[in-house]
Image (cartoon, rainbow over all chains, first blue to last red):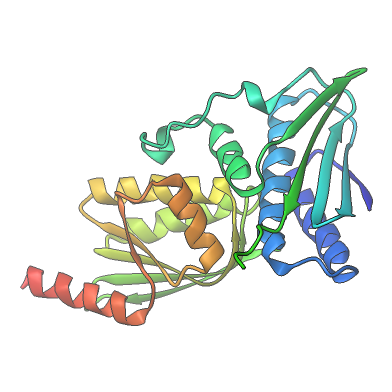
Length: 137
Length: 122
């Protein structure tokens, strides 16, 4: 599933609608809904904040893969922005004193693991895999 | 998904309960922040965010809540969260940012807390 997103926060609703369609058409576990929604929103908002001069749409792709979902977001006219360059959030500091962006990325890493970054021809692509945690047998 | 809110106040016990339903995300957080500020400005002692119908929260929503919690504490008020769904409880725990907030799993815990507050103020 592929979606072209305008550079505005109101598009979060379309992201959720697309995720709903994907889950409705597959047997993905409900446990993945929140991690997918959260990680996608946080990365989308990060892309908007780090490329405020950007004009074009951001492309969202959602794909069912073995054991989960692969999500990628591509900003087609952007300066490089690797989330790994954001220092780890200092959770010993009060929440309102932590750096903008770092908090969301911290949640993303905790819920879906690492975020993959690729930059080529001014296209900034972030992707992640959300997989159901293995259950104890 | 939108965020719907409903405010119920109990001036006798100095309690405000703000019921949240839907999604507290980057898009809905600014309006929620304004509403929460108005609730705190009414000056009631205990301000409870009832999250039984809150399905989703992102870092933007969490930031608003914890900023308000700190502000409330500094003003001699309390901001509390109740009835968090398990996935929302999990992100609160990940952030380890609860020193300014009380959390209640259910109405009984909340009532016990309010009774204790009242007993202390007598």
